[in-house]
Image (cartoon, rainbow, N blue to C red; front, top):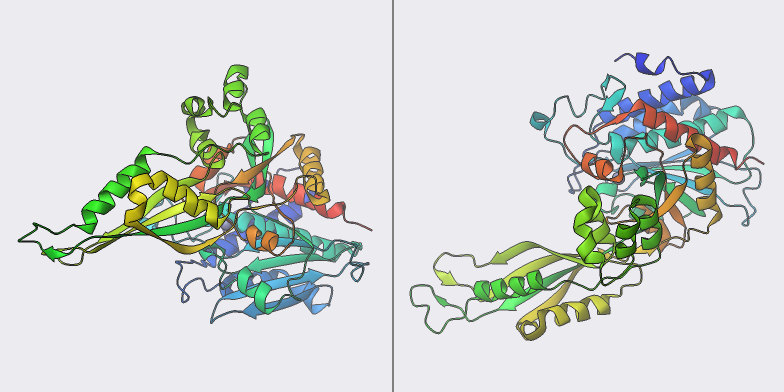
Length: 458
Ligand SMILES: [Zn+2]
């Protein structure tokens, strides 16, 4: 067990104990190595569930916490731990879900400076796959739930930890399955989850929305023939090339939604640059001046289309009659499937007739209102903890929070990372080699989460 010396010097002793327990829990969750490669046989989140069951041992034993382990497939377990509130049966009192996933994406150990599943604490940083995405938060959520159960102070509504499987592959074996098969067990009326806590200028960013995914497969047909006599044949591969070029030449239009202005106000100090960014005509010209945040700014200001998979032909000597181009398309709140198809046809112009558009699996963009009382509570907790104002943001990617929003449950990101965690750095660190988080960020997040819970006391 690595020493926790790095955190021993901190002041408040109750926080010290809770923090060192949280760090230890995080280390154990990393070592559980619940690697999800997208297949049913991967993940083994039951290992993470066992770590948490040990963490909650006394409280479950004494009946202060109610725990349920639910398995969607062998090894694909999720743990739901509920602390009942004093007004648990009153539907007007919100039940707060703390949604954390247990699974992590694969890591290539040979590219890491340390064991990705060692959970080592070195110079004030905990190393390992999943430390940032999102085991540190799962650990913090578990710690504040256990503290609330131990304190004996009653919360008005239920406080529920949902430590789930399979977030990294879309939640089929995790929250999606739980919402479908065990809705009463996972019942909450509002939720906190990833992503949040990154610094946008002087502000702390908290997700209130996520882009959707509307993948499409473009099927391009040609006239096959023997490759030794190509005359008269029309290669689907060549036609696909023309279609791809067309997609590279045009871009979906800019749509500056309601989260754009707060983003610019928080992140852009230069007044003239900010003014251009707020002008739909000049915004693209200004993107190049945004450095590391340009890609994110580009992504949240429009529907994006990225060709990712290209397939044509199966034999070297046959001119292919069919080619497939898979497009990763990310939508904005309000973008419909019909609009995506119409947009593609418009972009393809005269090539549209050559192409059949098929729908791949996707999900809608989702947003929760920033006027919601839970978001206000998050803002208070962060401002109270380190004085920073909060800016609501939209994630370019997706998380399990969307599943709650789709089920009508408002969901927000959470987290409070230390000052060096710019939005750019956060994007660089997750799913990357040498993923690690500083103890200072775990402590800040812990303090903010405690403040959210304290606001629930009856
Ligand atoms: Zn995650």
